[in-house]
Image 1 (cartoon, helix red, strand yellow):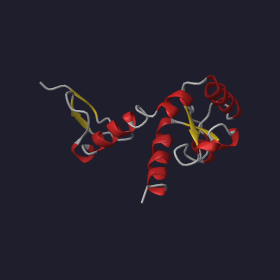
Image 2 (cartoon, rainbow, N blue to C red):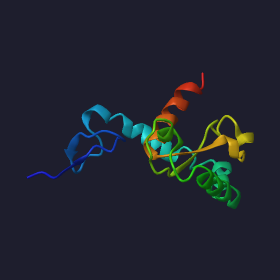
Image 3 (cartoon, rainbow, N blue to C red):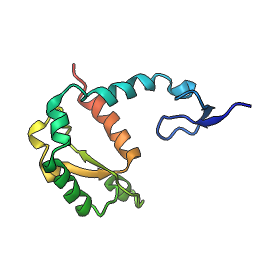
Image 4 (cartoon, helix red, strand yellow):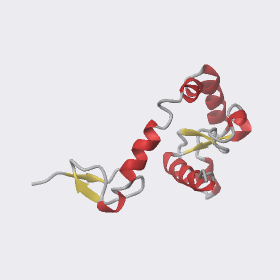
Length: 126
């Protein structure tokens, strides 16, 4: 008897065999996940920034300001724990705004994934 688990794609409820990562609908997402995981791996500037005490303090201030709640869910009347400090304007394109508290919002992982996909489309390099 095969063991099953849920697809690794956020929000997908499809059950797949345990040795797989994604269902047939999301198999191509594995490539983008690897890209996203490794995209800052070789950029020392990003690595240094996200591991700096400046960033950790700013992130903590934003969490307190937003009551540790996802601001996107809150707008829809849903109370959801926010875990991700997100740059409203991505640091990749707006590096000078990386330490601006007004450019930080707290999101849950699901909302952050949606926002990241929207940013990728919006700021796609031409």
